[in-house]
Amino acid sequence: MPDESHHSVTTSIPAIDRRHWAMRIGVPFNQLRASSFKALYPFESRLHPIDQYSCHYLDEGEGEPAVMLHGNPTWSFFYRDLIKGLRGEYRCLVLDHLGCGFSEKPQKYRYNLENHVLNLESWLNGVLPPVSWTGGKINLIVHDWGGPIGFGYAVRNPERILRLIVLNSSIFTQGSMPWNIRLCRTERLGRFIVRGLNLFAGEATVRTTVRPLAKKVRNGYLLPYNSWKNRIGIYAFLRDIPLESDSPTHRLLRNIEKAAPERLADKPMLIEWGAKDWCFTPAFLSLWRKNFPHAKVDEHEAGHYLIEDAGKDILDNIRKFLKTSIP
Image 1 (cartoon, rainbow, N blue to C red):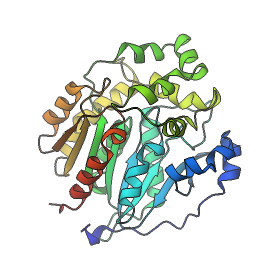
Image 2: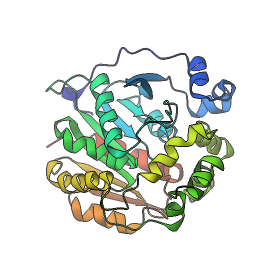
Image 3: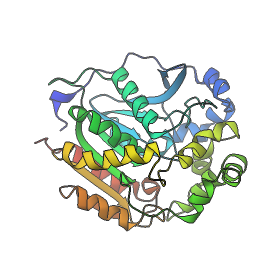
């Protein structure tokens, strides 16, 4: 059973009227209320203020918190089956990063790793009580860009962390970048490919799994990214990939990479890895093993969106891991 001494108080923040919010973020409400989408994503929406903007998040279930952080070009929809499988025993807190999913997508915001980490910190301070022996601690689940964001938060707040669960991701300055992602980062052509044609998010729905996604699932992934304006976060994440060693994000990632193995050495870690990922290749898994030799690792015949390919096995492994005692 989960550790009772770390239960948190359920937030009192009410769910929002999704009809009005859909108008605010430029997503047709008739698509949100369609039975096919509601069956996949049967959750209530809540908002957290970030400066003059609002981040969208889910808060499902009660118990020991499981915080889930998505990557690019996904959103909280990526975790829908984990939420359904865990919310009977855990409080599932799932954020849409600013610029993503059902969060606001300001056009002149400084989207970078540092701000995403600070936004995460602001949100968790808002929905969780202070850390004490009675609560305030979390199980952190990360995927893709959720890795550097989540670990950036964790090294700043190690006292918040109970356990760490890593899905295909990286917090390392080493590793190669596929040519197509490099192309999507370019100033003019990349902007047109990503924001104009929506090819980055569109291709992700067919190239990130071993088994083809159902049409309704592909539509769910693409739902919040239906216009040039609403794709700004996707392009911003690509531009922020720290390939240049003198960039602020590269320096921050280097600090996270150095600090995490020491500051998080006592945190139990589970790595669930899709071995057929063309972006986060086995070389990245080797870096995780090298830097976190105590981590338990499970590999799956799955792509980058590994929950889509191996969701039942991953859920079972996470459930078992979350029941392990904390040293």
